[in-house]
Amino acid sequence: MVLKLFLLFTIVPFVELYLLIKVGTEIGLWNTLGLILLTGALGSWLAWHEGLRTMLRFQERMQRGEIPTDQMIDGLLLLVAGAVLLTPGFLTDAMGFFLLLPPVRALIRGVLKGYMEKHMEIHTLDPGPMGPGDVGPRPGGPMEGGGPTRRPPDVVLDRDSYKIDE
Image 1 (tube, rainbow, N blue to C red):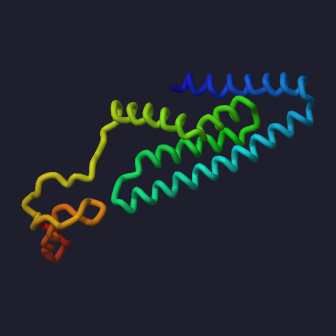
Image 2 (image 1 turned 90 degrees about the vertical axis):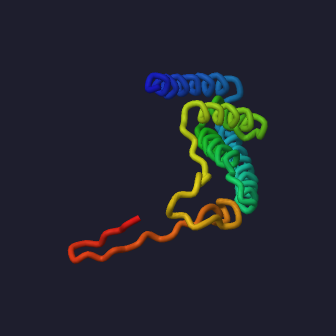
Image 3 (image 1 turned 180 degrees about the vertical axis):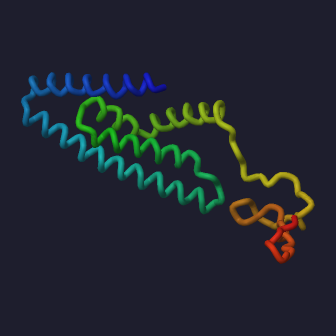
């Protein structure tokens, strides 16, 4: 992994520099700088707009009591898109603009979810079977405070310390 990151952070700047020089010799210095500023400004605006749409979908899912995993992954991808769009260069701008496209994000999101399901332990909000300290279920789902109701532990006062019996 360290080798891949090293190659990424050394090869990409060389490719960016090559592209900037090549485009600069074709269209001129000022046109190249203007193009870099234009793609940065347009990319920032598009990233903000897509981020706002993702935040609204995030809030809608939360209000329905659903976990907005897709929107969280989209938010992360949009953050990466914004970062690479603000980095001067044509290769990083292309990567950023591709990440702003919802179908591309959906494809990458699917790959990331598959990777996470394969390599990570997933925890759910399911409280499992009721134990001896449970007094019964509450109505509603986990986001509404549902699930078993646990009684508070009995507190026994001692001269030296507080002890909690469960």
